[in-house]
Each structure stands twice: as structure tokens, then as C-alpha cells.
Amino acid sequence: MKAVRMPQTLDDQFYILMWPADELLPAMFVFVLGVLLNQKVVCLALAVVITKLFRRMKEGNPDGFLLHLGYWYGLIGGGKAYTMPNPYIREFVP
Image (cartoon, rainbow, N blue to C red; front, top):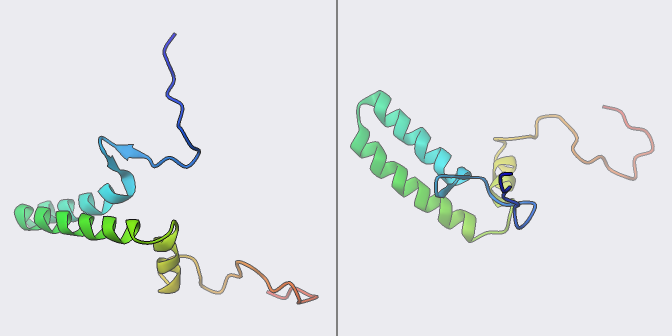
């Protein structure tokens, strides 16, 4: 019988090799863009800088800050959808 790894908490970060997925994905995107543009070294350096800035922004703020920032600037969610209706309205009219 094979041992199963149990996470310490329910919200453990998903890791790819030794990096958290949310830090690795922007770097991979920039590097793949560098491969397509034939500028691998420049984009690799840019990916390292972006990852460091992303990590600094993530660690210096509370959990969910980047999602809130994306919502604030209209990148995610939003639109005309009501996420939390006003509790004092008696009739809900979309």
C-alpha cells in the first residue's frame, strides 16, 4: 500500500517542482513569449524580474489582494452582475 500525502492545511498552495503555481505561471508565460519572439535571454531576465515583483506584492499584502486588485481595475468579475445584492431592497429586479 502506497502512502498518501495529506496537506497540513486545506488551503495549501499548489507547487510545480519547487515554485508555487501562481508565481510560476506568469514567468512561464513571459518565457514562452520570448521563445515565440526569438528573444529568450531578454524574456528570461524579464520573467525573473516579474516573478520577484509578483512575490513581493503577494507577500506584502493580505490574502486575496491580487484578486481584489483585478476586480478593482475591472480585469475579473464585475460587469453588470450583482455579486452581493443590497439587503434592504424588497424586490430584486435584475
